[in-house]
Length: 183
Image (cartoon, rainbow, N blue to C red; front, side, top):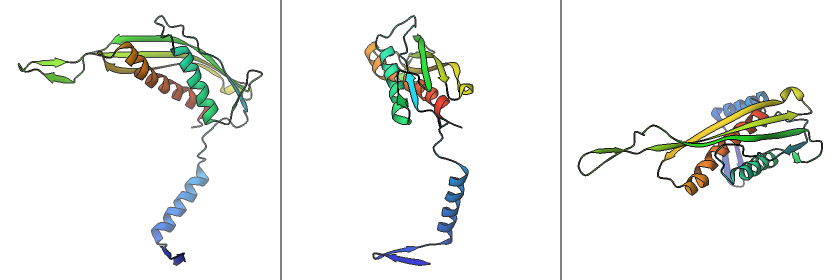
């Protein structure tokens, strides 16, 4: 079967029809929205205070802003301070930088010796309280943790600029998926 549209000839083969059939079947079997938040309209996300022993002075504000932005930008939920359908709150319970094992990355010196670079690990842990007033059985209290390993020669400002962002992004992804994704 051939169609001519503005001097463009489109040829439909058996493969094209099979592809269209498969896409139609997949679309009917699975909804690509993936959101379990169907009846909820409003969300309140409180600030996450940093109650870790080692305090990064910007972590609390940055984490709170990032998680608020994630929910407000990637869902249809509207932010509110009064009687929300969803309440998300919690605290940062751990922020630590610790040495890890020596990495396998090696450098050979001019004398033939091998130097192995040492690495540090940043760990951030966040305790989350999620309350869904529309579907109370979905509510939970969970602890999320993630880490990033980096060369020990990074400065404190480099760690806070890059590694903290990586770890908090991963934690926010986990929280967001646990609340929004319907897998």
